[in-house]
Length: 487
Image 1 (spheres, rainbow, N blue to C red):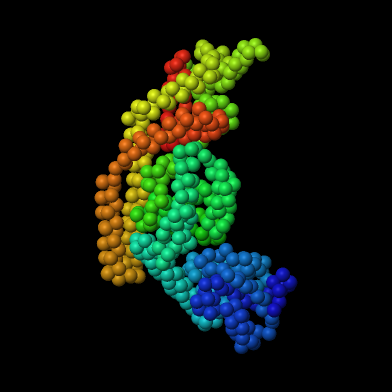
Image 2: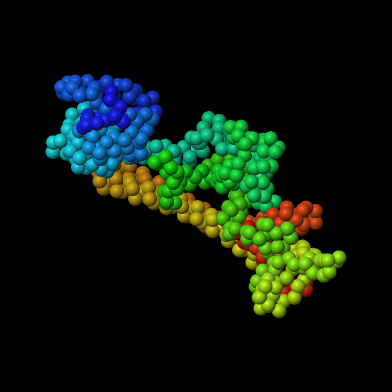
């Protein structure tokens, strides 16, 4: 065969393609395709040696294939006269893609021949046949996709798991079973993040130092920790069809295409804690100064008179210098009349304020936090309803086009109505346990107080940022601690 890179004149091109699963399922080998196409060339009396374009292990769901691109490049350069395939679906399974390719071929006077379907795009009848066969091929692909979707949905509602088990679980007879030892690590990770204020890097570093390996005996990374903390499976929820991996790139689909099945697998992390972790992950970023300042309230303390940040300054003679918090507007612009305050005193007032809050948390704060959790729950429920309605809408379109029977449409309608009713009932009965939330916040406040007393400032501040948005200093012993309701 003539190599592609030495073509000097218009030649006949043979295009062969097989995906791994096709070859295993149907025995469609590349060698068989080549032999058939070469025999066809001899039978047609074409003496010139054809050029091979072979895509091994690529699906025909799109046009992102290396040798197909080279083939198209050859067409555009005018070096190809004919293109031969054994079957239409070797080139593409999508009608629109096929028509796009045929337009390019016709524009450059290239004939497209599929030997199994016995047609030639050089004739009007061949082009008509191509469009009809392409439509059938696309319809079959959609039917296969729909059947896969149906099977996966049914499996999920039955508690079946069709892929590799996530960390914390073992897969037994296609069902997830909690792995007790791994589940302890999952609990630790959620606790480190939610209650101790650790970041992804710190958690991964801690586990790696202890020699605890992730799934498949790999070390932990920032990405693996983040994925675990955001995986709804740990609260018992199966969520899939969220991403499209076409073109070999992962892209998130519109949320109305997601499939969400609640209470489908055993729970490792209680729902409220999981939701609080999501709120913290989605909260606005901590101010850079709050992370880098070596002082407890650096980056958090605000002036009660003008609202500007208060930063550390040093006051007194060199032999007796002391830390003070001073309004930056006063220090840099002279536009604020606030005085400076001894840093140790301010930090003591902060600790006293936290202690008072732990004894009597604001009811409004707990309600705000509960509302945030409820909002997340509401969004998930609405997602399930949208998914069910969109599936029914697609079935209506298929029925209108004569592609499915009335029984199929009625079954889909019944399923949609069941999902909508169950979701709405769950929404009407679901209430956030405010007492439990209050206990969680109380625990966090007391943990922060203990940390301030015993841990280095950097570690204590990591805990502070899990709960506190800012601290406002008005006068001596008069401060306001503002909690972040998304913490």
